[in-house]
Length: 97
Image (tube, rainbow, N blue to C red):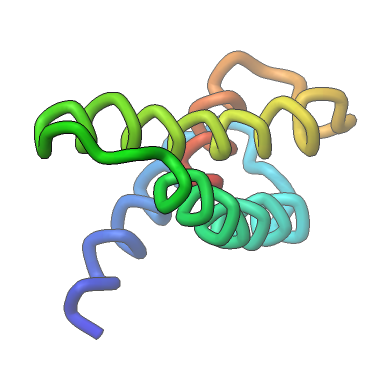
């Protein structure tokens, strides 16, 4: 449970910094889609061959996970009616990650 404390505090901090707070429902759905990206990211990471731990960590793992998180923001929230401010990109990206 202590491992989740920094995550919760960061989410709360980013949410409070937004001048025009986003609806909780949209944030929750973005968070759940971000959680769901673990499955396809893990599948891609398993299927790609390993070369070296440094290459695996930076090119395979990080690129795969961040690409799936970006897809959540691009395909779910980008055209959403509540995505109306530049800071919203930060809020929703934090929620997806």
